[in-house]
Image (cartoon, rainbow, N blue to C red; front, side):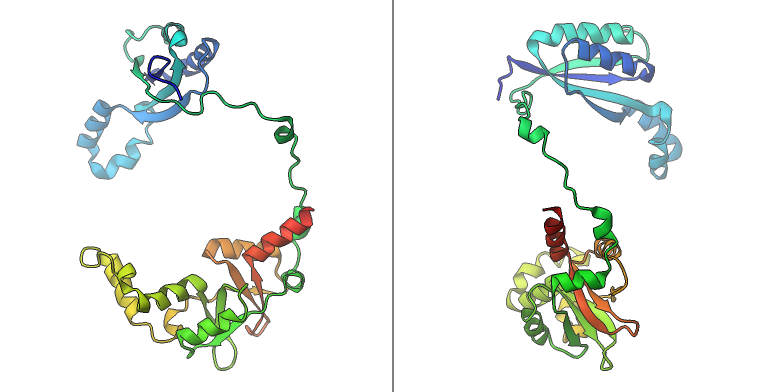
Length: 289
């Protein structure tokens, strides 16, 4: 931590982008490190554009290169500030020149992270994980399931929420339940989070009620939660993998659908297993040892 007499914030708003490489090089030679660059737009020009094209053209405005500026921020030791300003002036050809930009400084009351600890030899030489990632990525789901040994949670579409809780408690590693028809075909999924939310809704409705009188989306959510009677009212669209699919394909589906696991189905869409995200991570950990 430092006080205001030791550091200042150097702010440069650069209009002449051709000078940017020279400016950054000059600042570095003057002892300024860790400068941050931001893309910015001049307020006067932006205002003129808004008058011409309206609010609907705002996105287009930021795509026009001539409106873009670069704002450079750097926390500088006061002992180096005069040299940094002189170097910047020289690099841009003087800030009094039209369309060059502006430079100003501000006092800094506190600074953290300026002086970094040197990396230890150990941290610099830590090896990257050798996961044989292609082997794992291309591993069939059926093989991964044998290693993971997770029993799927399967409930029929008429099951109550508490019946589903009971089924999930028998296989705590499966955080996603498969909802099936009377013939055993996969109809949908229910996540542990969904189930917990609706169970606790009945116990602690004030947690979910919130400002439903002023928030339309939350009002709709409240109404939907009040109308859940069995697990089919709660389930989401089915997402699954075949036993012949790869671990890579399974992870992609989990990621795309924000799921912590997937049921494995056969060619007739009957649930025959389960593959979980946490267990896949454990498998990666075992592979890397």
